[in-house]
Amino acid sequence: MLIEFRRVPGTRRLILLVSGLLSFVVLAAAPCLAVGPYLDAARMSAFIRAPHDPAVIGMITHSEADDHGASYYWLGGDFPVRTKFLLQLEVPYIDLAFDDELRDGFGDARLRAKARAWTWSGGAVYLLGGILFGSGSADLFPYSTQSTDWEIGAAVVDTLGVRDERGHPQPLSSVSLWASVSAVYVTRLSDRIKTNDLHGNYASLGFGAIYPLSLRFEVEAGGLMLGFRNGGTRMIFYGQLAFHYSTSTQLFATLQAEAGRREDRASDYSAAIGMGIGL
Image 1 (tube, rainbow, N blue to C red):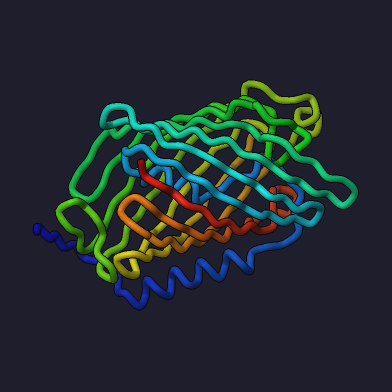
Image 2 (image 1 turned 135 degrees about the horizontal axis):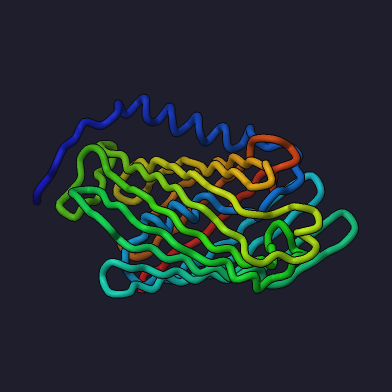
């Protein structure tokens, strides 16, 4: 077995950093309205880092805001194309409860794509693309926009510390990092959202750190920074604990919260559990 070593931050400092980020996820919650759609920051990380293998992923999310609560049921699949490309199709179903009414239905289906552009020992650069089909209803906003959103971007993933010959980070001796930048262009908006200027073109910057606690457990923290054409900004922070039941099956639990201006946020906080199964 070949083992490489690169300088890794002190374990104690890294644990303190991750703990601080997880605490911020819980404490950052505050009342909100909405600019732009609800986004799951951990899903961006999972897609960027996903192996180029077929898989089925399912997730249940509960989100809370000052004027509504929502349950978000998400089912997706990973479809590799040759060795360098990966497609992911996701379809959500949403139960949305306001103070005076209940709404439910399918949300906007989304297709994501990534292409591996460059690789090195322990890391890679990916080109990203995607489309939100607008197949849901604007009545379920911010969990469905009924808009057609095109996304293009890039991401980098690297592993610092000790890893084996397959590039897998070793417990307590390594940390994996990712970062992404992308732009989203909206080509179709429902009259309801357009009239209220709730959604439009935006840019995003993502980042995260993954620290393996053992051969089966890993902890992750990170976020997304969003800037909208209409002047709105969103800061989404998340923390996640994942359990690798086997090499092809993963269970995970996620907490997410938004910070920034009250009128821009899509939710106060959300919690999710999910499973990914390789095929």
